[in-house]
Length: 496
Image 1 (cartoon, rainbow, N blue to C red):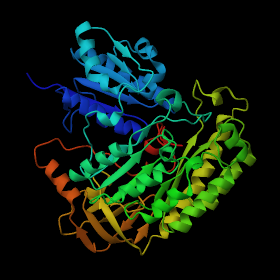
Image 2: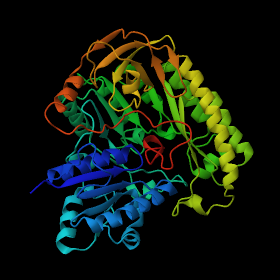
Image 3: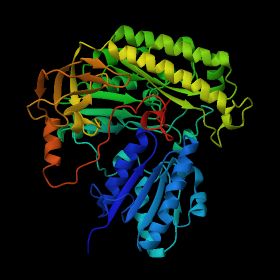
Image 4: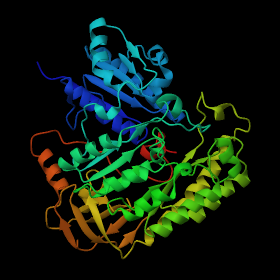
């Protein structure tokens, strides 16, 4: 009998992407195999949707896909469909009522139960809905199928203690729970031993790490400890909260060579009035003060942000304050979102809901301004020589343009001329930037050097042992400007 296949579809933030790596590991541990490249969409024995609930389009996208699957399942006896993640935690029984052909619904706290629930649904021939109200096992204790051989996510905490009025995540992910520092470092050391050279520390409010033990400097200590791990070349983290961003973290970033000069610092609004209504515990001056301190300590740091346009009660004057902060902060990138009403959040019932056409007009003005700023900031990179970690899947036109792509230390995307020497994902190329676009850099001259790395060795080993080629999880931030209907990575529940 042939092996059963699976497909995992992920929506939302980096935390969801990392959870999907765990779901894949669980399924493979249960005997399933990932659908090979080139397989038709949803042509698997088990299709898993790992959902997001941050924006309204998440609901529409999920139920649209479930509708497409109904006739496919009728034609394919034994096919199973599972829905997990934040939307499953929120909607629970509603999913099965709207789509009775779904076999399993599980939440954010019990992803480890997926194989058991699938088997139970098969035997009992009825849908299994199991939503845990608190974390059953820290996700990092579960099996994993890492999407990248050279870069990895490492979760340091789950949940969030904030009460932002626009966000439903705390209700779905629970209160913040921190991992032991020793467990985090042990996982990183094990990954480095396997060839990983870049890690990204993950948390809903990553720099609040240590709140469980009352150590306000626990996060900066963790960054410094990462700096002592031999073979670990790049350390990133996402997403911090301005409230908890302290001077010791800035010092640790500046003084730890493998912590990259990159910071994603969610602003959400530049208006003190709106920030108060959002229950954001900082104001414009505090935010800009952090940016100034980071730039003083790391002049070449690239700073990105998240901004919500059209929050209830936002006036034109409030919006102009957001434009002012964008001009002052000079973000390398900004992930801009039109406010989306989420049932169950305080903001959903606030007075002063801004008309859609007004939100759209403001949004377009902000996108246009940020495009100008991003392009101007990228032009400052022209002439610089950068070390680029070669990535897999980041350059969609690389084949046609005879280029390779990767990330600079500050996380800017760089496309560079393919050298004669072999270069593998995970290797490091030294290039000189010759051209800047708003969302990427080009190095069109001859590559100055290529350093073969243990990470490149790990990628080569994975791809020469007959394993299916991974799709690749890109550790860069999502594209800038007008977002897709469902925001990717940084703009999701990891945004603080």
